[in-house]
Length: 264
Image (cartoon, rainbow, N blue to C red; front, side):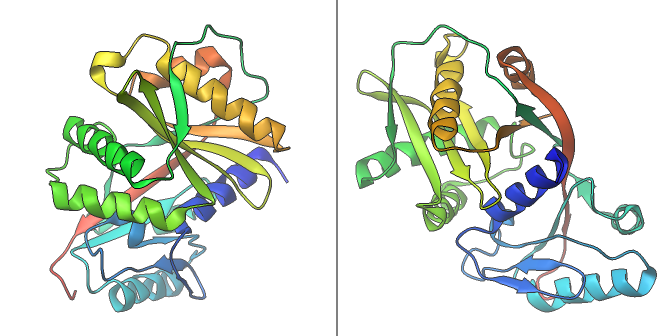
């Protein structure tokens, strides 16, 4: 099995963590009526529809199972049929920031920042994570600059908690202050993934992200992963940092979204 398939399967597994998956003939659907506006909790993936009848069936399943949400969200990768993507574009679905999935055979050595990295386990740490997630959302780079409020951030963090312990968040503390966060997971296929990286603006360009990535890489390789990958928003500068650390572009994943009237 090649890297692209391993990464696609691992990324899909991570998104689905904490939720029941409705498997249909042509796609999988994650639906969470308690968090109707959260895309990670309400989406379609693993689409294999290659003709009009199959595509119609996927769209009908979306309407049936996601009617509680104002959004229709589809995750795609290099295995998603082009004809299905063409239908999404025709129907007015928009591409949110394209993600470059990057894999690393061997991480390049880098100087470490003087920080403390802790796994998020206790409520105090979850509260600190929520503050950082709010700062991340307010900056807007990873969320497409949507106007999101504190309630939405609360839903995001509660969704993160559903994914534990398979998906483990970590804080980077400098003194008493949390200045960055990130998460790791080891998928059933053996791929190790690094996700949801964020550093406060005031703490950037100080080696903190590199230190966290190095910590994650060592942790997962010690656990015996077959590879390590992470996702970089194509429009962000962080992709250059990842490249300098030894990560190389492997594939693209996309999130297609359309706002609808609830119940459509």
